[in-house]
Image 1 (tube, rainbow, N blue to C red):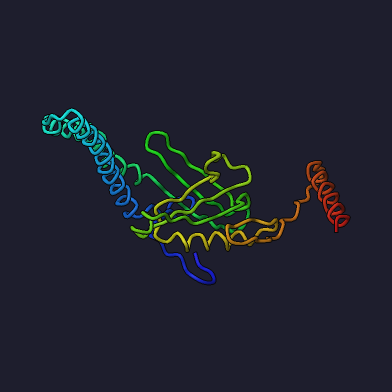
Image 2: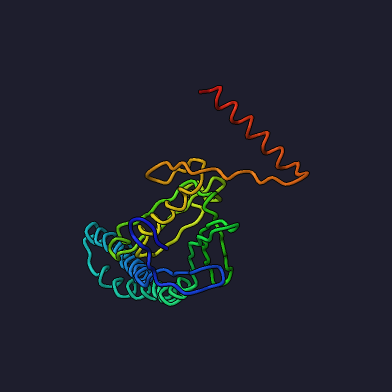
Length: 237
């Protein structure tokens, strides 16, 4: 993939529908770090709160020995429970990440350019998001992402199935070349006609002509609707 500006050269491998690339190993390292960091922060909150409670009890009652009695069993059972969750997470999550596949297919002719995303181990999801349906494209890099030198691309569409909290139709996570990928998708969006909001600018690509076929009622209806739209637009102007 090439064009003006930067050239995208991610690690790729051939598949039937184009070239796929996967999240960087730094994405795995970031999630390992977040898992361990969360366990330590939970220990600080839980053990710190219990220590404060027993310290106040000793202070009010005037007796001592509560903290010394409870300290070892509390720490022991906390880490037994935490590690029973953390260790499987550290093992399984990298396997889950390796199942990710991304592809930005830009094939000329009848095949429309699209963003391809595959995720899942048990329930495998494959999504094809055509560029013509994209309304917004943005790159995201949080504090921990920047710490590991990675970022994500969020793709939104007009009929997106995202939740109220996140309207992204699809997300390409854990990429070291996320800015170059965003620029490439923006370039592809400029090939279309209706205005697309692309996070930082509005692009006005060109509308594809309506294909004409003999005795095609759908084409005739679409042409009439476009003529009505053009008349209304001229009246407003």
